[in-house]
Amino acid sequence: MPPRIRVFDTTLRDGEQTPGAALTVDEKVTVAKQLARLRVDVIEAGFPAASPGEAEAVRRIAAEVGVAEDAPAIAALARCVPADVTVAAAALEPARRRQLHVFIATSDIHITHKLRTTREQVLERVRDCVAQARRMVGPGHEVEF
Figure 1 (tube, helix red, strand yellow):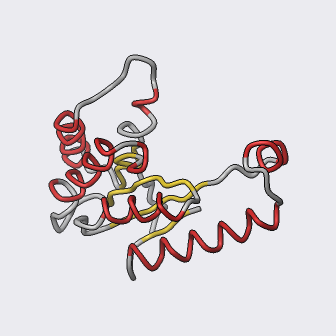
Figure 2 (cartoon, rainbow, N blue to C red):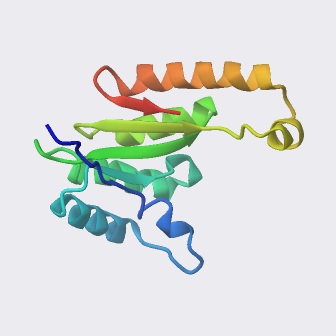
């Protein structure tokens, strides 16, 4: 079987970081519906902990776009912070296929000056948050770090 290319679209999360680019919740749902119509494999719907509006957008995309039999996976981004993981997992709950992506700064400068911690403590946070995310999204869904 030839290799398969998966399309992971970040328009709704990364694209909105462009200066002057801001979408309403309804506009985000409309974009997600069009991405699903184009048959992308994964829609990164947003960063739910960023704001209540962002959490609502991810939840609506999960509920309105992510429920069909052939729906793309709906992904959300979360910092390696338990509250962020909880908000992201809750927003993804309606989706048939859920992906939760957890991140944390890992450079020496960030660990020392931004996080004010040690590399070992960062690794412990990663283990804890990934385990929490796996529990919260449930079996058969993806967690990525």
